[in-house]
Length: 100
Image (cartoon, rainbow, N blue to C red; front, side, top):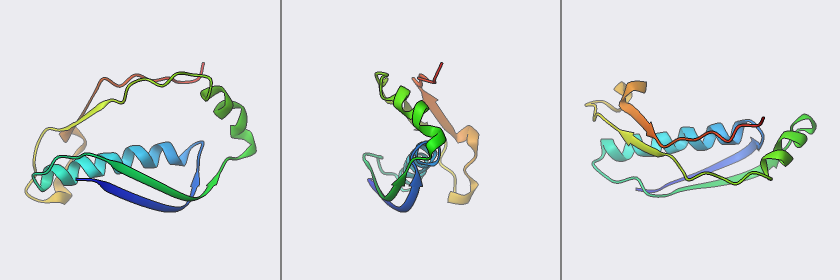
């Protein structure tokens, strides 16, 4: 199962990373709930903006090598899609590349 998201406007420095992870979690939850395998996430952003006070941090991020993507596993299948909880989501191999 793939997911496609179009977002009218997004803050590249803060909001977009959160949105990407949130909708990837959602894709995996829905796939699990429907007995499907989550595959791709496509993200289209209409108005990408970077605030002046984020420029230095974002430029520093561009100098770092990305790590492999973490693995998401939905451990339990709930009867109702609204019943999933944080403990149902397992994230493996996550490595932070936070700014120093």
